[in-house]
Length: 154
Image (cartoon, rainbow, N blue to C red; front, top):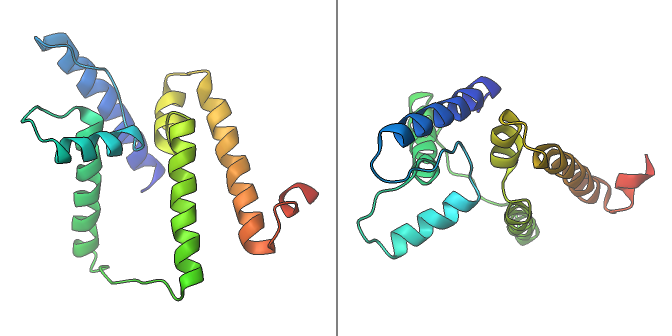
């Protein structure tokens, strides 16, 4: 996703949810793009379907997945991929768990805490972005150089 597309999604979220909050008879949270808590909320909605309506961020998750699939089909870029060996699969699983844990710990992901929070000048956004950069540096040092200390040598 390009930076322009992310900016449009974030701006669209703020505009739409704020407009709906002014005309709705029920309380509507003014929010924008996020992908950590909404995935959990979406899973809970699927498991315990009660017929209630979704909010913006929960509906954004399947919308992005469906939109990406449509774009891949249009660009004729759909292909199956698999891990080469068990070591690579374990790295992917551990990385996914670490990213999920970090997203929950930071109360948002790079989109939620990074872009959406930064667009409101929230104080936690620079701390979250600095933590994301530091975590990426440590992770790359571990993967490429084989040592966590390699991240701090330079």
